[in-house]
Image 1 (cartoon, rainbow over the protein chains, first blue to last red):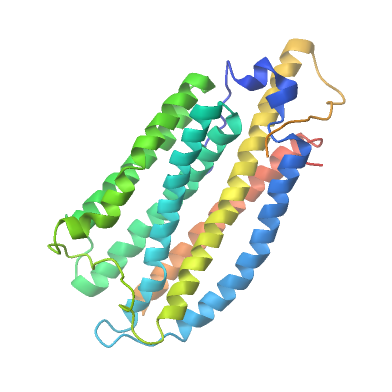
Image 2 (cartoon, each protein chain N blue to C red):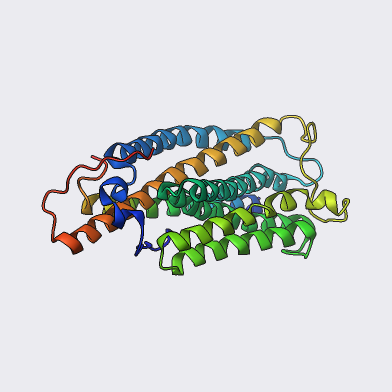
Length: 268
Length: 38
């Protein structure tokens, strides 16, 4: 769910509303909207091809039709990884440049990443129930994934309940940078435990059967495009909220603005 | 087959609902700030 707005008491928007009040400027937000629209149309086409490729995919000789969950479960994981990596990167860029646009990207990427991670944690147990006969086990991969989910859920709760401002954004950025360390642990935990894990090993080149490569590729591409589309929309919403907060703060200082001045900004 | 349908169904519906919420929020903010984004 989109998180609540976070008004900042000492944000750059209040200190310099012309520069940072409309963080992207009118042109920047329009570019995000255009990017989102383009991604949306491309995504619609990809979903169609994805659905057809999954429908026509061969049935696995060992697991049967339930094996087709392969074409959605790992791609959701990749989307979650991408979201959390972007959260760390954007947080790092914020610490370096102090530009709020990166803080907003970090928050947006974390939220979309949590959505993908939640879906991964729903589809995984469904697959487990159908294959192993039970919903959950304290398997290393599953346990670290649960930890990863809690860490980023906590990130969103932290952002939601903080008062905003640069201090909160810096803390969140550092938190996001440390959270990224869980991702390689999550990916390689099966190798670390030398196969003593119920969860299947990571896919290697050639490990998919004949005819399974295309639907898997379509799953990865479609889910990543869905991630980017949702990220563009979420980031745009965050920028619009920041703009609204900046306008509200200017009105508090100078009175209602009947014709807000066009905003310029150097952010992308 | 029901397990497969559940996975794809839950994924599709969840992402669609999330998208619709974002679109609604985006429209509300743009309506309240007509000068933003042209």
